[in-house]
Length: 621
Image (tube, rainbow, N blue to C red; front, side):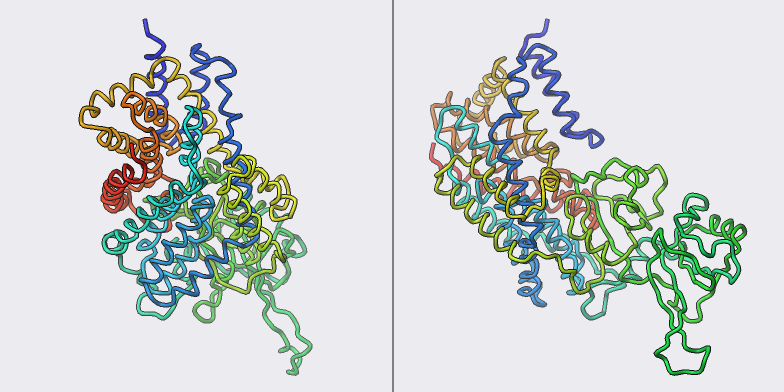
């Protein structure tokens, strides 16, 4: 007969195994674990859903809204412009400024959102300096994790550390309690990444950009990388054709022939040209939309496989056109962009047809590249997963709008034009004032921190920095919210059944005779190992009670042990699935799993040594 404690450990083991399987969503796993605890009779109804009313969960949701206001008003993008301005042509300045900037922003904003803002900027700068983007993007992700340890609100484990101490009757951590050790870790990590990490990531630049001047965007390179050129064809509409006078929506060529019209070249009269009659024509080129009406003589740039194209030509009567000079019918560079899916994108695990990609974004997906695979045309029923890279085609305005939305897709490369006026007005200043006031109130603790965060979120809404409630709801990473709320009762179940006491006793039995520093080091290593494969939030939720109870049995302060778990849960560098920023840069930097291990494991061990050494000094037992 199983005891309650054994049953909890079985559910915990199953939960951990499911967390390790990429096909399972972490939030769904956490909810399943929560239901298992309730249905097995280990928790009451109130205990089962207590996590959803936890102040930390509410505060994290509010901070997502505050971050959305910062991102949407363009305030965060100004940081990217500073990086462009100050880095110049120096790789050293670019690397150091990038690491410091992303760490600073991640101390107060979502590290995923920060990386999404700076990712295209760093790709552009690295290519202009003829550096492989992979030399900088992994350090970018690592710096965002280190930056999260610089303040109380930098990452969820920090907030949970404070709340755990308060729940057990200990004094809470202040806003800058994490800052001194976080700064040392950032300094050590920056030195490691500059002197060693970047050398291990050094790769030759792509041949297309080698031996050139500054390069910002190259459409020919993108078409070659994604192997799209064989699918691009130029067709002319004869003077008498059944398609003339009909719109593309009426013709339904994509559904019937699997052929998409991308661009149109049309010759039109120009009365301003003073040339002999019959020669006063100019060519106008534009992107084809569903309402484009076919005219005789139009040249259509289409996207189709050869088999589909042949059938299309036979049944419609359109004619192939050969270019009179190289590149005449190449796609316009301003209509192309490379994008990647974010780890928490709402498009993950859906097909392009499921989400009506073309209707939703006004863009056509020309090619899809999964990690470790060659680029190709997406199959009709093929699901998108985080880290996928897409080559898309459409109007520059639609691409620019997509570039401003960082939640689902990040535009890595597209042609730079004069920015579309977004009407921000004074809102960046208002957002800056709201964030500054929020930080001041949190430091002074005039109000409970959760109240301060909710107040700041409401001010973002009332001031228009966040447009409406729908945008506010979209900005919240509900996967993170559900994950935290559903995992908190696991700690309750472990405590009720004696599981926490058992784990802390085992830890003390193994390392307690050596001293509290050994217990601290053991906790750090256990949390560090867990956080490489499962959420750092789940790791923190499970180990904070163990740290506090172990400290009680040792008769020492629990703060250094709790801080050890907080820092180790956030310092996850050894795998691409350890953090969302790691996953986000994997495709853009063309990394392998081994690249993360080669650079991340030494950094993991170095920072572990520094943290274990410093924690007892800053937070004595």
